[in-house]
Image 1 (cartoon, rainbow, N blue to C red):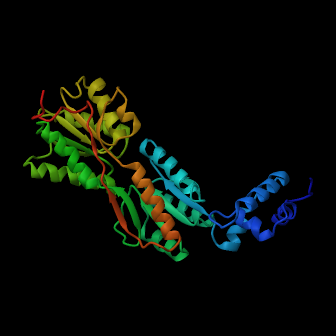
Image 2 (tube, one colour; image 1 turned 180 degrees about the horizontal axis):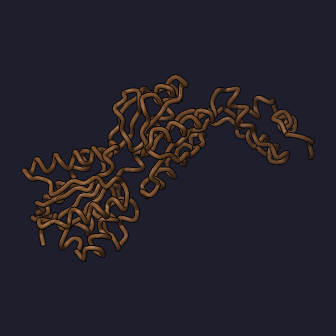
Image 3 (cartoon, rainbow, N blue to C red; image 1 turned 120 degrees about the vertical axis):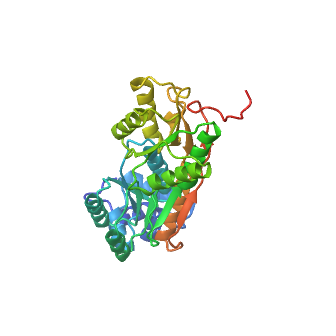
Amino acid sequence: MSIKGRVTAQDVAKLAGVSQSAVSRVFTPGASVSPSTVEKVRAAADTLGYRPDALARAMITGRSRIIGLVVAYLENMFYPLAIEKLSRALQARGYHVLIFMAENASENVSEVVRELIDYRVDGIITASVSLSNDLTGRLAGQGIPVVNFNRGQEDPALTDVTSDNVSGGRRATEHLIAAGHRRIAHITGWQGSSTGRDRAEGFRQAMASAGLEPAGVIDGMYDREATIRATRDLFDRPDRPDALFVGNDHMAFAAMDELRFGLGLSVPDDVSVIGYDDVPMAAWPAYDLTTIRQPVNRMVDATAEAILGLIEGQLEPRKTFIDGPLVVRGSTRPPANAAP
């Protein structure tokens, strides 16, 4: 069957022998429609080559069923994994994800958010970027909810989903202390981010509880080259550290490479190294990295639940902290009291 011009829902309804509203319900996620009607409508749509006009539907319903995802720092392997899982979780609920890359500079984030508003997104998820108060106010005025994934902000109008970074930083440091280390240094994540600050706070808490002074604290900026420079600085000292807590796995890999191949040190015989995230590469034999696992599946589920609940008006803004376990591998010495 051939129809000149654009195929419409009315054409599909006529071929399928159903009403035009039935065609609309078939292509509306979550709508109530009988299996037999779905079968007839989809068969007619396939025959005619019909696809629903998402823009037209958005103009009618006021909902685009698109969620904007603003992300930076894809060098960290945690984020591509999380983005894939987020996309799948939202698609399963009938939403599509529009991904925009941004830098943490406020003017760049502002421009990206302006573009997302133009796309009439139903909600925005930010990953590894922060929003200014002006931006959050503008989004609130537009009725566009926001969820921060793996990044916290003090604004009570924003919803955050993060791992419990203070607890994780404390647990990582306590593991090193239990292994008998006393000269423990910390290469932090970027201190402009809540994750970097909170993990560093956990480190300081654990050291203070043990009556220890840090052997050094340097901001690694979530950057490989900055981490290499920080590692050289920390270990170019007479009383060099005997253990190193690094603010995420991406930086920990850089630190381990520099320790072993740049400085000729053995991990963990000369220095123990612990990271944060537990990306797949952490389990590779080349690194065998002890780390704090970010519970990505639980974080993704909580983020999807939060953004959809906000869109549908069923949730109020809230802060969610999800604890993750310590994953012990070969980059750290065993606890001092461990059985041989």
